Amino acid sequence: MMSQIQSNIPQRQSLQGNQACALGAIAAGCRLFAGYPITPSSEIAERMSKELPRVDGVFVQMEDEIASMAAVLGASMGGVKSMTATSGPGFSLKQEHIGYGIQAEVPCVVINVMRGGPSTGMPTRPAQGDVMQSRWGTHGDHPAIVLTPSSVQEIYTQTITAFNFSEIYRIPVVVLYDEAIGHLVDTVDLPNPESIKINNRKWADGPAEDYEPYAPDADGIPPMPLPGDGYRTHTTGLTHLESGFPTQVPEEVTRVTSRLLNKIELHRDAIEQYELSCCDDADILVVAFGITARASERAVNNARAGGIKAGLLRLVTLWPFPERILQQLVERASHVLVPEMNAGQLILEVERLCPDSTPVSGVNKFDGDPIHPDEILAKIEELADE
Image (cartoon, rainbow, N blue to C red):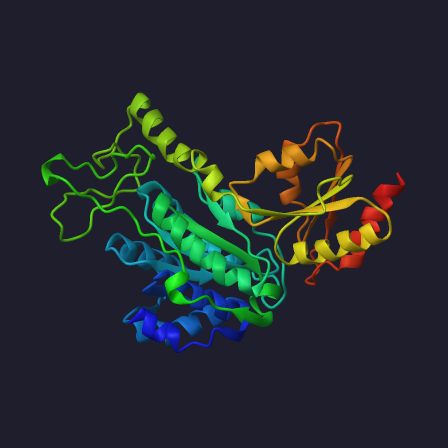
């Protein structure tokens, strides 16, 4: 049925970013959306409410963001690919349940369309203030996968990737972009449904009496029990053994928590995504993501036209942070520049990975307007004159 529905959608469409997100989710196999309206993400819920019934899916408007995240987790435990969408304040409310999803290893996708903050802030204006919340918003030591598309087309493809990653690694995956891209309208080429690579979670097989719900395979990922298949499971947010039952024995806690952390670290090569522009001989390296990466690319091109050797590392995977490529690039760069629409969050991670001999500067803006290419170019020119 999905192929029939998708074939009725023109392959080339003029789409808003949030609409592309909804269509990407449907193409990935999402069959439940639970959410609560919040600017600037509401168009995702609106489009999902129309598309899901066409593929025998379920749309639920919950009473709040906390309940929305709980519904997504419950549906996923039942075997349904599930998603929610929100913005900064709602993302904060979801954090406890995101932590539950990480601990219980429940696949799902969370879309966060960023806006100005803190608190109610500026609901209709773009920002990039959830960089660290997307990584450390929930409590405790935990892994994270956060994808940061920078175009309408990429919102579509990265939403599909988010579902694939969540299914493969049994983890809530965050897609993080700002209001400017969410409301941007662009021409998008939708791939033929049959050409889209779709990954599904590993289901448990073998004798039910030998099954342990959190016993990992060689890849560090435990197969999930499909409800109705006869596998006993115990699901909890407490630190638990392979059996699913809680433990506070230090050696056991160390073992099971290390496995939880390492299951993402072991698969960095398959998860990390980035794009390089003019980096082969870059003396000034710009590191950016999302709408700011678009401005940075224009600034880098203009700097090159003026004889300045600038390059751009565009982050598609924000977390896990692409550490190795950054460390390789800074070996030949004399300065690193981090433009971002906040008071300085991404720069903290860049500084951590750069040697003391390589200075790191920021271009920071949090007034509700995107950073203009000329603002980044001016800083590049200033650094080139030093």
